[in-house]
Image (cartoon, rainbow, N blue to C red; front, side, top):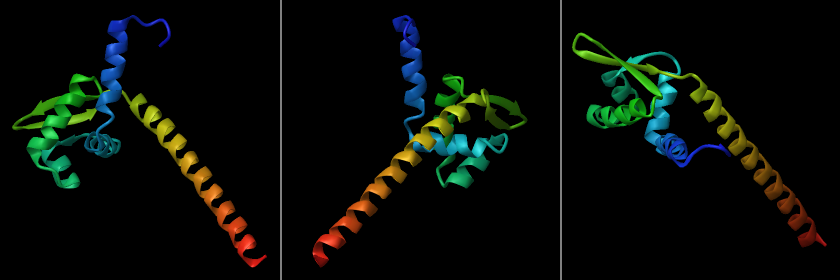
Length: 118
């Protein structure tokens, strides 16, 4: 990232912006198991087909999903499986932060409990 021109950084920012919406993350998670059409995704997420289509269009624009027309349906699949490596890396970091915070809270509770008994 250090030597990228500003135009490339704009593309990187757009990529991360696409991942900043929980609905799109849910869609990407559903596509982890294989391709689906808009109706399948809408039913699985509880969102309207129009809403799902809007999110899928943005994900396709960013190169994260690929689409293929089959008859009257459009099927979507992950275009680059490396997206899951990135998401797993971020999720792992967040999980470690939660674990550390929980350990700190537990230590605080133990310490506070000792102080009250003294």
